[in-house]
Length: 257
Ligand SMILES: NC(=O)c1ccc[n+]([C@@H]2O[C@H](COP(=O)([O-])OP(=O)(O)OC[C@H]3O[C@@H](n4cnc5c(N)ncnc54)[C@H](O)[C@@H]3O)[C@@H](O)[C@H]2O)c1
Ligand SMILES: O=C(O)CC[C@H](O)C(=O)O
Image 1 (cartoon, protein in one colour):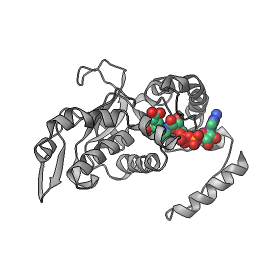
Image 2 (cartoon, helix red, strand yellow; image 1 turned 90 degrees about the horizontal axis):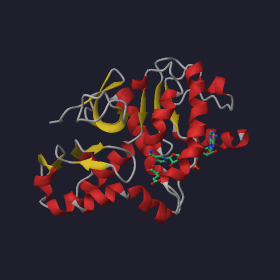
Image 3 (tube, helix red, strand yellow; image 1 turned 90 degrees about the vertical axis):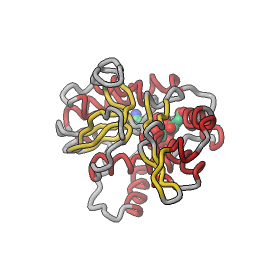
Image 4 (cartoon, rainbow, N blue to C red; image 1 turned 120 degrees about the horizontal axis):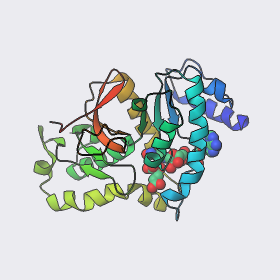
């Protein structure tokens, strides 16, 4: 596998102007030492005809072994993002496998769903995603997720207006839009015969920027352990909420403006 890694290294060097150094290794002790952020992405993707549960056994085994090494070698302040699927279901198991790391430091990656939902609205309005804000991706990273646009706003014809008001198409927003977002991953696999890549990498970059560099981004979606006090979601259930970011940490937002 080190040969393959050499190829990945070459690509990383080609696309990272701010890159200072890379350590390529297959040793857990070296990989996880002094880490600030860990993305659990090395795992099986779903192929056409497979269901999320088909990945569970294989991927949870990979995550469990890696995260216990993470607990052993990484800083206690490390932030862990579970990307590999089924991301929601795996995340609590991952958390339990590294008890030395606070459970608030873990999240399941739902930034891609958030980007997808914003893109659907932007395309329908004829603007770009950067003109849309406050779309909340609720519940989880699967077909039962729910894009909440009650607080969403768009810059439309020079004004900032609520998405319902701008689109004037409640039927689409309450029907086709929700279904398109919920089934986006599966539809893409059917079309491409492979799961998403470019959009996932872009969303991972967005997630890092929000968490690490741009805390002024107030309403962003992450799958986190519920505190039992918000939106009647039971405590310790992994759930995608709108969160506010402060000091590289998150807080569940109750009803964004
Ligand atoms: N949450 C999300 O929004 C989201 C988005 C995209 C992909 N995913 C998930 O991320 C995962 C990876 O997807 P992909 O398209 O990159 O898959 P891929 O098959 O292209 O890459 C998976 C990589 O994992 C590596 N790997 C396999 N077993 C490993 C192990 N035991 N230890 C370390 N690495 C191992 C493989 O060598 C391969 O390089 C999948 O589970 C996919 O469903 C999630
Ligand atoms: O398996 C799916 O339905 C989607 C896979 C995709 O990589 C994603 O996580 O969005």
